[in-house]
Figure (cartoon, rainbow over the protein chains, first blue to last red):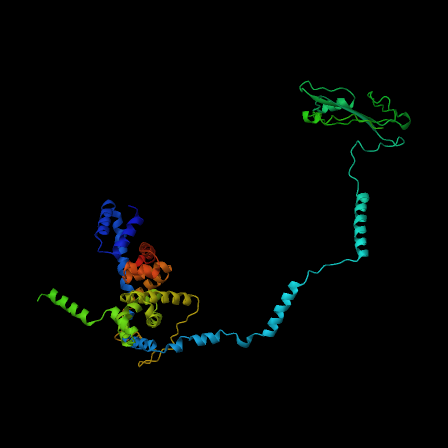
Length: 262
Length: 209
């Protein structure tokens, strides 16, 4: 038996000592668990303590005749002096002249009149309406023309004028094998084909950028690799392009077209 | 005649001369207020005892008990079972005691001793009680008085349901059904509250048991 269950059994027995079933259950529990005897003893002492301590010896000093006499006097008091009558309650709750009824009626009628009127409509003069519409249209047009253009793609970028000293790059991109190494890129920059035997696919970006003197600029030999001539006023710029293999999904959208910048 | 038979005869005679609660209630309702005086004398000690155990203060207990008798008199016509005046009265005492305790905790009530008249001995005297030190007052045992105060304080700190169940059922030994009716709960719930109260007091008063 759990100790708490035993305690509850003892508690019930202390309040009903005449119950033999409770007494037998307690005795059986004590035979099985002798250690519970201390718990039973403590509860018995507590029970006696509560009854003795709260038996109130102070009550023995009470002057009961005086108590009864005063109770008798209070009982015989007329109820009207302590219990309000219906008339007094009715008078206490009557509003009477506390309300300005004329003003109340006027406020009620004003509220009713306000609800019955048609809703007020805000009207703009014709000239003001025209001005509002014109202003809105002008704002839209201004946004359209004045808003900075989005960054242009290489396709739409205007080629530099031939008179400017710029580098021209012919970039041909085809899907053959991925260029995944810097060496491959370097070879590409020098115009050689770079292949990575370890990869099954490679995209080779053949990029040659040179800045010849403006008089010798020619686009006919753009396909031929150019070799840097340090003696000439030409610059060979190596460009490393990270080219990713073209995904099959992108093929349908069209491979990158060769860019020819004139 | 044997002693047992004589005792039974005395008891029977007492029963015949003393009217039961039903007759006293009916006579009170008929306008005979002296019948209610007899009810007061019959239940005043019980009422004050219950209130005192619930409130821990004798003065407050007597105020509450007197108020309970007055309310019982004014609402006597609402008593359905006239034979159960005692249980009905103690329900009023319990409710008033709990309300009084809540009001006192909320600061709505103050127990003033200044209203007590001066007694013959030059000291303030209780309205209904004798001053400690009077030869009729069993206040000579200070140790017992201190222990009583300790126990009363421990009971006062119990939750309301546990305190009420312990006082009414365990200490006042009211019938289970009456206590359940006063507390508006089941008999099993009353026993449970008493058990929880004992469990708590066993720890609180461990050094005294």
